[in-house]
Length: 222
Image 1 (tube, rainbow, N blue to C red):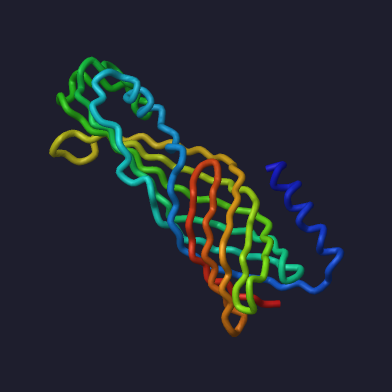
Image 2 (image 1 turned 90 degrees about the horizontal axis):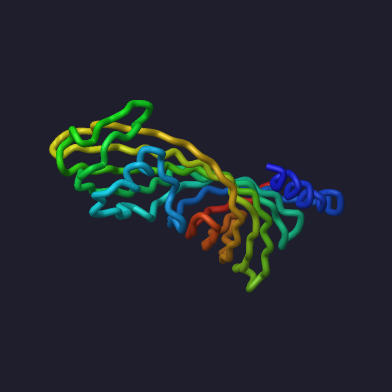
């Protein structure tokens, strides 16, 4: 959080230099790809370290998301923006030949896996939301197109749900966990300008936790 506070103070300094400012509002959609697999719940950690694991795979390591953002530009080349992303979901699975796993604590209850069927399946879903704060620098390529770069930070929240499934049955056991983190980000993109203060932005981002490609509709107002 201290990083965010220092970042905001530095970015707000131009307010005292330039009185004319333009606000921007935007909505977007994009695709997020996880770079570092999401954190395992305590239940899945215990199961993953047990003997008998025959498959550990990502079902869904890319996901779509939606975004809203608000920005302020002090001139035609420099802006700051705050954005919120939601709707991202990743999934992974474990197939287990239940041999010698023994007793594991699942959501506060001791479960004897030796009493379960020989083959069980574990699925983990991770729902991700994120807040972004960034500085945007534009370089005009023509009267209608800008090339831009962005640097900033993400603060992300992840909720994971682990489900232990038995063959030919519905969910047998479930365990939930939550965690949050911050990661720096950098991006490049193209801004295509249209009449009536509307522009369409295509952007590729890279962070320490995930990569993003997005299409964003931007509207300027004073």
